Every structure is written in structure tokens, then in C-alpha cells.
Image (cartoon, rainbow, N blue to C red):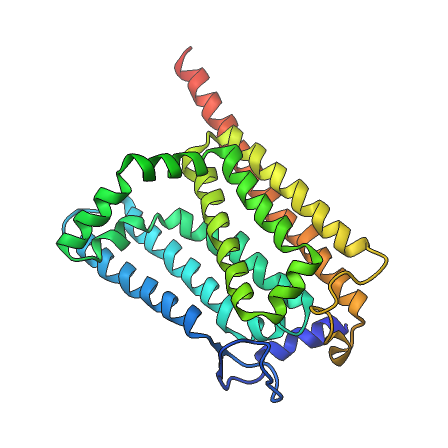
Length: 293
């Protein structure tokens, strides 16, 4: 299949390219080096490492909980770095199909892994003592606790994430983000932040039954958006699909493949998470019932 041939081009080439993927790279798929992406990724990795060492030297982490969280963070960081700097990112600037894969990795793979790792304490411990005091005081202020409490409430987190997804997929705004590097960075940042808030709410704030409901809602509305793109009779994203012919696809085929990826594989991720939460809720309810007998 020609789509698979396109996919195989990811493995070719590894000369790093600077800045944004829309720059001219005639030598094929390359790694990209945007300081606005690479520097924050490096700071995250260093801060988490330093903070984890400090925490591990002060507390015992039984039952492998610390190692498990470390594994989640490393996996989340690696997938995020791969999505934003690997040839996948470069290909995403030229094909809507790969751009969709990039976005879904950020929102449906990296974000839940980061949420599972609960990295905030490690980031705070990476700071010097006075810095920890300032940040800790700010985080525990009534204003910050109110903002965090409101945004991680189930319906609010689902709404915020849903608005970000739908707003950035408005054709004119999506195309603008493809041609404007600042908008593109803002798009990725808003996807990541709202996804982190959403998955944090799902994993740590909501009851399992409520979490399953919000995952189901997200699966439905993203599936509708994907279906609208896949079944549209004409090209909606002109700038994003402009290079499709160079890769053996028509612009409409490129848009249809991108929509199908959002509709089916990503929907499967949300459905799997929802079923997991539902199973945990049913199991927990059963255990409570047995305990009350």
C-alpha cells in the first residue's frame, strides 16, 4: 500500500534540521531541532532526574511504586520527544496523516503517561530549598488551588480538552498553524496542557465510573470530528494537504486518512481506557458489596 510506503520513509535519514518542519528540507525526512521544543524537553528530563534523586534519598519507595512512576515518566517523555522532534514531526508538516499521528501521540499516549507518573513533586524537589518554598507556597495558595480544583473537575477538564481539539481543527485555524511557527507551537502546547489536565482528572480526581463516562464522551466527540474530516466531500485543510501529491496522495485522500486515524485508532484508545475504568469501578463495587455482607 502506498500509505505504508510513505510510512517507511520515517526510517530514512537522520540529519538534524533546525527550527520548524515547514522549512525547506529537500533531503527527505529529518529530525528537527526547534529550541522552543528541545530546551523545555531537556529541562523536564534534568529536573525530573534531579528531583527523583533527592526524593529517593529521603524516602523509601516500597512495592516498586517509585520505579513504576519513573517508567511512566520516561515513556511519556520519550514519546513526546519522538512526536515533536523525530522524522514523524517533519513528515507531519508535509502530510496531514502524519500530523494527525503526531497530535494523537501527544494527547493520547504521552499525556496519560505523564499523568500516571505524577511528576510535580520531582519537579519541585529539583529546585533549591528557597525555590521549593516559593513554588510550594504559590501552589498551595487559595487562587492556585481554586484554579486547579476547577480545571481538574471531570466535566471542566473534558470540556477544556474538547474545546482545544475542536477549535484547533477549524480549517482556517489549523491551516494557519501550519504556516505560522508561533501558532504551531501554541497549538501543540494547548493540546498537551489540556490533555494533561484531562488525564489527570480521569486518573486521580474522578471516580472510576465518572472517569469512564468522560472517556466515552471524549471518544464520541473526537470520533465525530474524525468522521467529518474523513467523510467530507471536499478538501477542508488546503495548506495542510498542499504537499500530498508529492507523496502519492491526493489532498482529499490525505485528509481522509487523517480523519480515519482520529476516528478509529484514537477512539480505540479512549474506549480501552473507558472499559478499564468501568471494570475497575465494577470490581470496586463488588468488593464493597462483599465487605458489607
